[in-house]
Image (tube, rainbow, N blue to C red; front, side, top):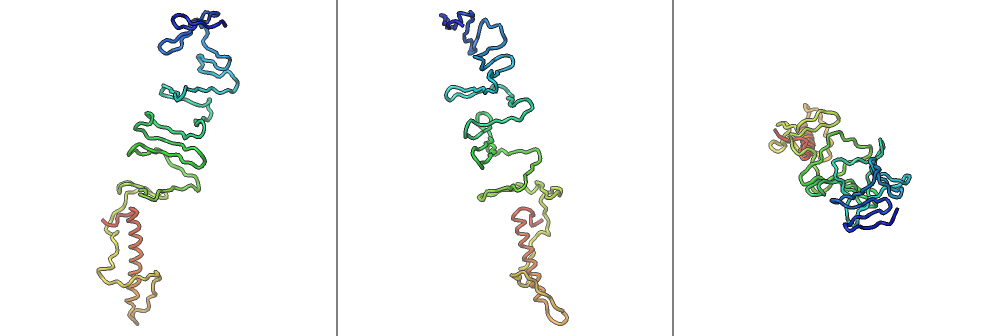
Length: 239
């Protein structure tokens, strides 16, 4: 190949092959090439098959200048060898972040770098994470909740929930869920130890005290269970 020369119009001329190289509207134009590919020192070939590395098992590195980015202006980007698993990773210890619109008004998925770090799924604003399939958790994995505001499962009484294969239902409401009234009428004193007292033969002695204390103890336990269920939202506690 001859010595490259620049013409008065700014074109680079290969004096040996008489090929002219210039830029036109931001594109590199090579005049006089009759093959369908361009090869650079057997290390890189550009042709109808794409950009192909010339060195066996060699990498292709696309490196912008300075803080420049690599931009792919296409609606689909495909990675991976034919029918092989593919990996998208970072160059070093940075996090991998996926978002839209360069992060403006967009949620994101962040895979944090380093051992035992998290994968953070963060919708934008009041957006939600929508999962359209079943969720399977492997054994010995738990759901951890924060201890400040807390977390709701179901944000309205009309949302349906079920456990252990039972059909999901709305939260039940019924007048029978009212707390047992132990104040209007004297029903005895609840036993702190929750050990109910044996009731003897009422025909020979007055056992009303023991009976009423037992009733008061049962009522206190039932009301405590009711309070827990109402506070959790699993029952309304009224009609």
